[in-house]
Every structure is written in C-alpha cells, then in structure tokens.
Image (cartoon, rainbow, N blue to C red; front, side, top):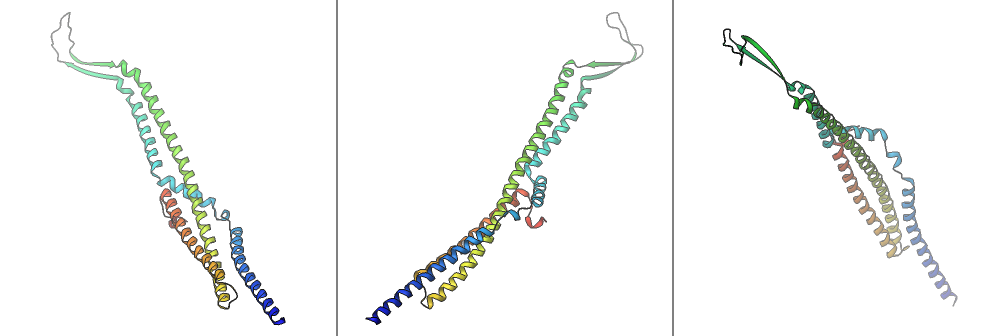
Amino acid sequence: MGVEANKMRFKLISARLKMFVSVTIILIIANSFTKLKAQETMMPEVSGTYLNKLIDIAKNNYVIVKINQKRIDLANINIQKANVSWFDIFSITLNYSPTGGSTSLNQPTLSGFQIGLYINIGNLLQKPYLVKTSKEELEVAKLGKQEAINILEGEVKARYIKFVQTSVLLRVESKIAIEAESVVKEARYKFEKGEVTFETFTRALIYESDGRKKVIDAEANLLIAKASLETIVGKKLSEIK
C-alpha cells in the first residue's frame, strides 16, 4: 500500500513538473515578446534633418512641382508680352509723292514724304484687361505650385514615417524570431529528456514558425515602404546621406 502511494505521489509530482516546465516555456516566449515590444520605439529613428533633405530633393524632382513652375514661367512671359504689346495700338504709315504731282481742291496731293500716325481705340481699351489677366494667371500658377508643394511635403512625411515604422518592426520581429529559436532548442532538449509533452514542443515550433513568417512579412513591408518613398523623392535612399 505504501509503495502504491509513493508511485502515485511520484506520478503526481512528475505531472506537475511537466506542467510547470510547459507553462514556463510559454511564459518565456510571451515575456520575451512583451519585453521587445516595450523596449522598441520608432521615435529615436525619426530624423528631422534627413526628412527635410528628402523634402528638398522631392521638390526638385517631383513632376507636378515642375509642371507648376513651367506655368509660372509661361505666365511671366505672357506678362512681358502684354506690356510690350502696348505699342500695338499705334500704327505709323509713310507715304511718298514725287514732286510735280497734280493737285486739286477736292483731293490735294503734297509732294515728298508724308507720315501718318493712327491709334487703334479698340486695342487701347482692351490692353489694361489683357495685362491684368496675365498677372492673375501668374498668381494662379504660384498658388498651384504652393499647393503642390504642400501636398508633396505631407506625402513625403507620411511615407518616411511609414518607412521608419516598417524598419523598426522588422528589427522587433527579427529579435522575437531569434528568441523563438532559443525556446525551440530548449523545448526540444526537454522533450527528448521526457520533461515536456509533445504538445508543448509542438506549440514552441508553431511560435517559431509564426516568428519566421512575421519576419518575412516585415521584410516585404519594408521593401514596399522604401520603394514608395524613393518614388516620390525621385532618388534612391542609398544616394542620400
């Protein structure tokens, strides 16, 4: 009776020990994940100086900004044309009559050169409106460029922050994956010694597999964020110091 009681007591202790080890492994995984999440932050990775450099480069390369600058240039040309065209309201004629031409009371003819000056009243009245229209077109072009720059700055900031975020997340997931590998090694060792159940060992393997998948997903997100940022900046990030 005493032997049977001891066997039962031993089995109970062994079962409790295995349960304790299993719970410990799970807690190690959860604790490692929590610590990594708590320790990592993206704020130190955000550089205002680097962001401003990206914005300046984007302003020089982005097509929409270039198009609006061309509109400003065209508006300036139109203003210059409108100012010069003031002379279009005047016209001068030069006539020459040889000496000895016939004259009459109804149609006298003077000999030599005659100069005539004519003023186009219609053009004279339209000219101020043409000049004003050209100046308004210039202001519209300037506003269009400023709006494009404002939108561009916001988009560069958003894509840069997304790039930093994905970079930090990749680092976090990589560290978690390394921790998961260590846990699997420990679980395999204990499983082979019979200290943990197959279920516990399988759970550790699942954690490791999920960790690897998350690393791959984080790598893909980082590459996408990097390409998106380079597209709007118009230059490879590796070329920007």
